[in-house]
Length: 419
Image (spheres, rainbow, N blue to C red):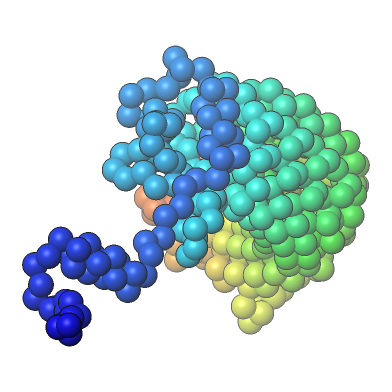
C-alpha cells in the first residue's frame, strides 16, 4: 500500500481555505478596535433638556438645533451636538457627558429635573438665555460639578438646599435672575468655591458668617435686599460687591481682609466712621462707599506706605468737617469723588498741586459747603482733568471750567455757617 503524503499549505497558497484562515489569524493579531456609545441615561437627559425648550426659540444656527439624536451624541462629528463635551473611555464602557456649555441666544423654556441624571457633568453653563421656573433640586446630584452658571435668565424661587452637596464646585453664578429667599446656611460648606455671584435678584434677609468659604476670591451680592450688619467674611476675598442692598451698621469686619483689591459697598445704610484700618489695606485699588450714611473718613498721612488705591468714591454721605489734606499722600490715586456731602472750609492748596501735575484725573467736590478762593490751579486745569466744584460757597471765576453750574445761594451758605 502506497504511503499517503500529508497535505501541505504553502504561504503562497491560493486555496480558498488558506485565504479564510489567513484573514482569521491576521485579525486575531490586531488589537480590537475600541467602540463605545453614549450612556443611555445621558442620551435621555439630553433629549429631555431639548424637549423642555420652546422650539420657536431655537434658531437654525443654534447649538440646540444641532442636537440630532439619529447620531450618537458623544461620537458625532462635524456640526452636531455643539455645546457638548464627553469623556473618551479607554475600554468598551459607555461615554459620559462631562460639559454642557450652551450658546446664549435666548432659549426659552425650563430646566428639566432630568439634568440630575448627567452625573459626570463638571461644567453646566446656561447663561444669557430665558430659562424660567425653579432651579431643579436634582441639580444636587451633579457631585462632580466644578462650574455652574445660570446667570441672565428668568429662574424663580429660592436656591435649592441641595446645591450645598456640590462639594467640588469652584464657580457659581446665579446673577440676573428673579430668585428670592435667603442664602442656604449649608452653602458655607462649599469649601472649593472661589467665585460666587448672586447679584441682581430679589434675595433678602441677614447673611450668616461666611468665613467657611475660605477659598473665596470674589463675592457679588449687589442689587438685592439683604439687610443687617456686614457679616464676617473669608480673609481670602479680593473682590467684594455689596452695592444696592440695605446693609446697616459699621464696616469693621472689612479691616481684616488683607487681600482685598476691589470694594463696592455703595447705596446701603452704613454709618459711622470709615476707619483708617480699612482705608490702609495696601492692596485696595477701588474703594466705593458712596450713598451711605458715613459721617467721616479717618485719613492719616501714609507717605511711603506703597498703597495702591486708584479710585475713591464717597459721594452722597454725611461727611463733615474740612477736606482731608492727607488724601494727597495716596500716590496712586487718580479719581476722587467727595461730592454731595457736608464738607466746609477752604480747598487745600495741596489739591491744586495734584491737579497741576495731572496726578488727579477726576476730582468731584460739588454740592458741599466749601468756602473761600479757588486755588489758582483749579482755574487753569488741563483738558485731561475732569470734575466739578459747583454748588458750594466758593468765590469761583466764571471762566473756570470746574465752576460750571454755579454756586449755592448766599442764603444757603449763611444757614449752613450758622449750623
